[in-house]
Length: 132
Image 1 (cartoon, rainbow, N blue to C red):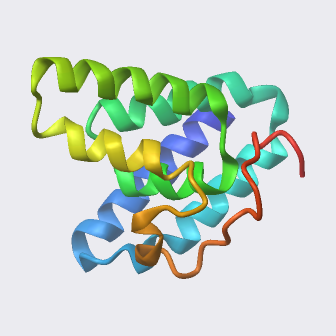
Image 2 (cartoon, rainbow, N blue to C red; image 1 turned 180 degrees about the horizontal axis):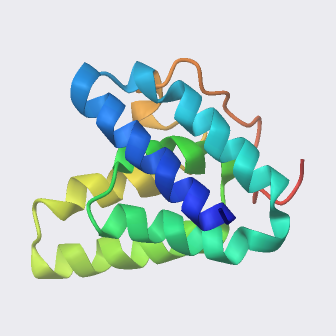
């Protein structure tokens, strides 16, 4: 199974766990595994970034993506999701706006939703996710 398939499987399990528990606390093992996957497969970064973007725009578990992006800070994902947010605002898509906005805001150190993920470390300064 390739890296993008592994990410899709983790996202699916995260979505199921979230639906059952109703708390973002259950996302920890899936987010940690996704971060390990991303960091362990730097050659697959472009494909993984595309998968994170697709998860967000196709109604996947946005909380999972936001937590991963808070840790990874992949610029290409932020730029793409911000573009989708701008388009949702232009269309007045009130269902997509808060989801996309939360994912974009996850790239900030002072992310308002960070309290939903008390186990998630916050980088000391903005990073691109290419190191470590």
